[in-house]
Image (spheres, rainbow, N blue to C red):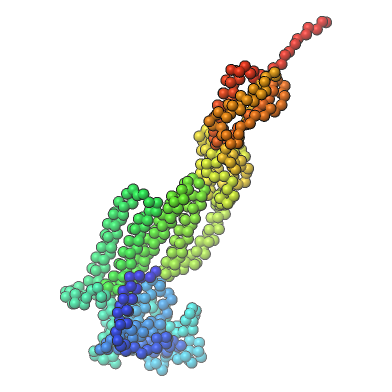
Length: 548
């Protein structure tokens, strides 16, 4: 995660300095320090820190030259174990701390330090400065494999080493006027806090406590308090904003607070690091805390953004909430959101130095066990995918299942389908059951539904009149549609009646019951009025007396 504000200010300073007419820098910018042996590494570190100190104390200071020398001194270290989020500050502190330590202890003659030839001959993998635990080791892997660098363990313990020697005077060969830069660096401030202000502070405010001046502790506490208070106040305002009614579908105002919180984290980190200039473990804690909070709010912004996009699409496209299309859009938006959050925290974990690859490899094994335990759920999920791909029915269709259940599809989800019967009973059916059985969709391919009414009239009835009456009643019924047209069929000569069948279409499947009811009632009344008999099956039984 980049420190955006820091880059902005650094860019402004760089553009300003580029307008200066002359620089004293004549160093080759791509020339690396010599780290081919313990002797070369120690010599390179001392050489470039000497030049760094010289450039910093020169009358005509060249900050570009200072930066070049500092970067070359940093390249004598192995920072592979330092989380990327704090490597920038750790590298500067490590250079200054180690130089302070070396200036206070007796160093061996360079001729006594193994050179490239001796390191190769004796297969030296690790060399330690005599009477210290400061080690230079051969890098076993990575882009700098084979180079001799100051080891990660030494980097980790430099603060401990410094505290053991900071009371010692500088070596006599450094001169009486020699002073190191480390304490000046850790107690200094950025451009927002002028040196004149610090000089006016009482002496007790400039005293160091745990490698921070007292004014730095106070400034940090005030900074964190103001940042937290501003976030709380902004959150209260944001709640009132979200509660207001609005006429637009894309509720982008929901993203305001997460973005504001992310900005506050960036500002706190920048001011604490570059302006108050806290250092050491405290800087690591503040930096990693702010970036963790930043990552949390970034993840929250991704999830909220996915929800905003999902609801905006649903409202814009006029898709019903209960439709499978809506579920697919929801699933797609949520999957994209979770993938982005996964990528975010994967990178955050790597940024903090957490071995996320090993963690996710273990999670993959656990995921296989979970998948086996949840196979029914997965079967229902893939059943939902199959329904989405095949589209055997949609929300609002009338379907009949294998077991005879009939009803209107109310919702099609990724795991189950809900249908409401004509008895107003809601039935939830797993998608795996639906996809493995026969489903009759009475609303497809056309939304209307055919109704058949079978009836019989007595032998001797006028069949033309019967047909005319039935057609008239069907055409006048409001629940029956005119296209396709109703029709009447004389089916057969029955045992007791002439059997007819009236065929017409209800506009919707759920009108079937009412249409049958109204037509049957009207037919019975009209036949009675016209004197048309509707016979019922009957048998005449004759009893004959048999003489003995």
